[in-house]
Length: 569
Image (cartoon, rainbow, N blue to C red; front, side, top):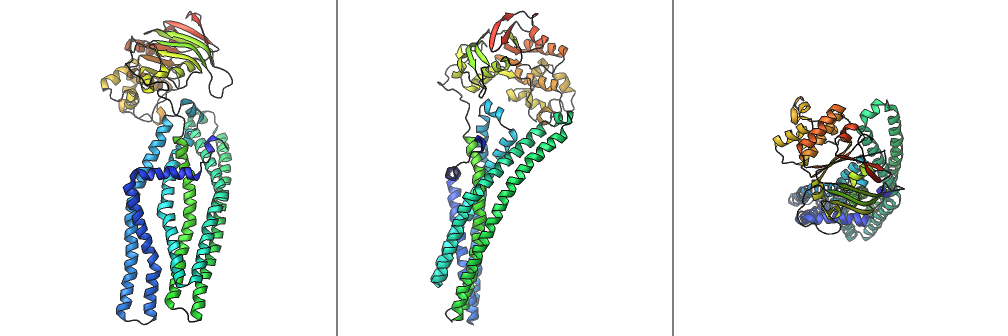
């Protein structure tokens, strides 16, 4: 069992759910009061039924019979009305708190560090977000709407039965206790491990499905459909085995419950009939015993089902604890930011040592790098030399093990992340776009930018012409992550987005790799012309990007060598 499969104590999860209840106390306690009222009316049903049957059996006058009939109807009407009103309060409480659970979990996921996201399956994370909501709902329904009222009804019925027939009341109490305790023990010790295993395999299945669907084009291009189907079959088989095991255990528990309910029926009805055969009881007492059994059986059977629902909900709601407990990016770990950024765009890496989490050796080894304000510096080097790591450290996706990264003379570890990332804009080789319109994607860096500013940025990135050729121009929706565009088109939109950000430092990490050499040269020239004073760090292998730089640094095994001639590269 790995970290993502770590079970949380039920008490801790229930505490989280209860904390959500207390966010809307008026709704919660009003719902509790109405649920208690509905429970009270439910308890009166066997008594009202017994009164009606007794009056008929004793040939009472018609007025008394009709009075008891109206009493029975009134009790049921009271139950129905109070229960309906309670649900009308539970609905807004559930919907608002489920939204709050989702948003809280989602915020923590967004604020988790880059290395966590890199190690996670998006499908599994999405599943956890959904389960955190549904888990809260299942626990709340089970505890407040079902289990709590069930315990009250069971206790009330035991008292009422014992009042009429002490032996029957004692028997009902013992069976109810055996039923509840056995459900708790079997659920915790036998069913829960099976549910945990099923949930884990469900996450594996969701994660694999999300990964495969995201790579559908690649899979088709390599004719790998059969391989992926075989992989899915293997994971689905494990899921099926784990789920079947959990379901079988639930069915076994149901068999045990029915045996106990059979004992309860035999005991209550048998004691009542025995007393009747001796003339010690009346038809109303037998009717009360049978009606009480039907009510108790319904609540006990529901108790078992809702106990399993609560257990399943607690397992699901534990995902909210997992997500809200994720490590978070530290906006300013040392001291609060004061003052105004000068926005010169001067960058310094001073003796930077860095090793990726879980890696065996350092990627950067005492890296020293100075980029002057307004300068365009190309960083070249062999694969794995640490070029892309430079850009990740500059935006604090990772923290260096030692050394300092300075931006305009300030240690970036002292800067709030929103200040830093407004100052440094980055475009990577994989142009990540959102499933929205082109206009929304470009303006993502500055949501309030005018249309003229959006067009200017797109023009500088050599994207305006192809955008206007699309059916809806800037309002064209680009499909899932830009799937309707070519790789070069996606890169140019990503470049336009970065230019619109108006950052003082622009980092291009193989950001033009999907462009032909002529278009690449035009794009790089447009970038420089668009913001001449902007500092640019270009991580590249291709000649056009290197030739556009003021100087070139060669990075070898995590150490920056002296400036080299462009022709040598």
